[in-house]
Length: 99
Image (tube, rainbow, N blue to C red):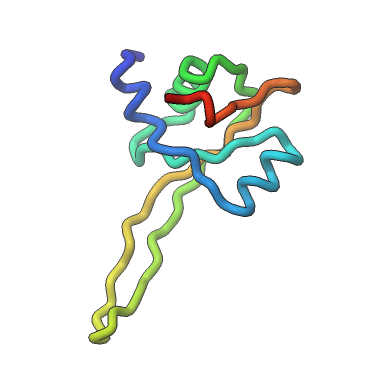
């Protein structure tokens, strides 16, 4: 996989209360990824960008929420893809060092 695709697969770390809990308990990290990314591409991107060993990952599609505006129109937020990445014991990703 070329280096340009590596940077386009992972969009951002997904920070939430649930992702913080699974990070502490199961050594997992959550990321927002490109909608057309495959498991193999995600695994390669995480391993090469963060220099860690990926044991497993779970990919899921998050459906966009339907919201109602002040004037009563119904809008739908865009759908997106999320991945939970499990790392080998003793390894971690430090997002503070990324720059």
